[in-house]
Amino acid sequence: MRYISTRGQAPARDFPGVLLAGLAEDGGLFVPETWPSLSASDLRALRGLPYAELASRVLHLFVGTAIPAETLAAICRQAYAGFGHPAVAPLVQLDAALWTQELFHGPTLAFKDMAMQVLARLFDHVLAAQDRRASIIAATSGDTGSAAIEACAGRERLSIVVLHPRGRTSEVQRRQMTTVRAGNVANIAVEGSFDDCQDLVKAMFADAPFRQELGLAAVNSINWARIAAKIPYYVAAAIALGAPDREVAFSVPTGNFGNVLSAWAARRMGVPIAWLIVGSNRNDILSRFLTANDMSVRPVEPSLSPSMDIQVSSNFERLLFELLDRDAAATAATMAGFRSSGRMAVPEAAWHRARGLFHGFTLDDAGTLAEIRRLYRDGGYLADPHTAIGIAAARALPCPHGLPTIAAATAHPAKFPDAMRQATGITPPLPPRLADLYERTESFTVAPADLGQIEAAMRAHARRNAA
Ligand SMILES: *Cc1c(COP(=O)(O)O)cnc(C)c1O
Image (cartoon, rainbow, N blue to C red; front, side):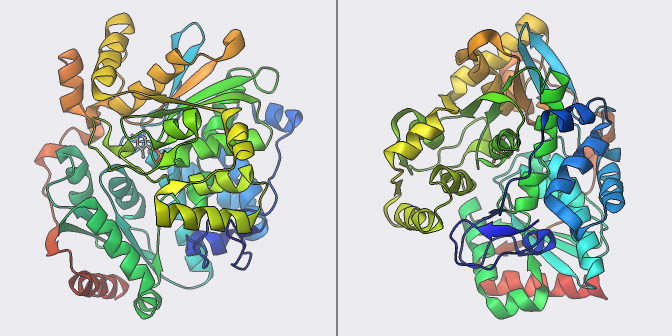
């Protein structure tokens, strides 16, 4: 299995190559050279398998011969062994034709664990095979950092440093990052905004000698392996509700377009997905694109669903490449235009193709609270603000023919206690394994948003960890 860049100017790589590289050298994103397929009989053969087994069989199509099938199966088993639900990603029926798929039973209570737990183990395996080490650097506004830390803690070949904007993440999110006790984990609270953190990470990757010296690697959602590792749960949900003999629909609360891109990929591979709904909060660039071909960047506004407070959905480039019939030159030109003007010029024909499949829906904070309240009142279901947007979207844009619709439940309600209390009067308890989170000791250093100081801290940490 080989991967090419959406911008066409980087050499093709195998799976370990794209895992370690993250971004392609030409600034593009890696995509499979050809999409693997799942036929009707392939889908039938996956019925009834434990989730980890299904995941390893689907992932195998993307890994190819780079990792032996038994090793990949063991990686998936270990990745999902610590989840808080035996089904890993259970379906909960909310209505006659509406389900949620709970993707939040991992260690940090958000769907990012579904991919990150696999990703860190893949890194460890690939690095060991090449007798190398890597330093993961990540900037976070919340969920990504904690999922990455939980996944990387104690891994032999990795050290990880996470930058978060000081005082600007929720207390649950910060504690999930800063209370992990492992020698290979470091947290830095940066005196600045999330954008400052992201700029520092970009500057470190642009510092070639530093990047080389530390073996810098990234686990953000542009890494292809994260997209691949989320495809299995779309396959699993579709099969459970009748695929390949019946079509299904998905509704996904969206920020960086990573999660819903995995749903699109499952469809591209042959899973009968008839309808894809993209839910946004007031940062609605994707809905504006789908309704009016208006992909123009506006300032990010904070909302009750902070993991969707994004204006530039980096994974959209992968869909754009497909919408443009895999024309890498046109993709590169469109992305360059977007960067310089803040507005993406998507040709009419490509836009119509996108609209034929994706349906955008926007919900503001008041609507989100109302949906949380309604779900609790009508069925006793506690949906976090992100999940509530996806469910509201599925109700607002029901799939024709009443096909079964699955709304992705992306975070546990206990991660957002303030919004839940405001909407329902209830503070959802943390699951038992996290019940003492507020008593655990935190450890992090504070640093100014200064490249030299952050790089010095990274060096010291990597050296300690390698010793
Ligand atoms: C990251 C995240 C999202 C957005 O997912 P994307 O892949 O960025 O579209 C939605 N909900 C929660 C809880 C998240 O953590």
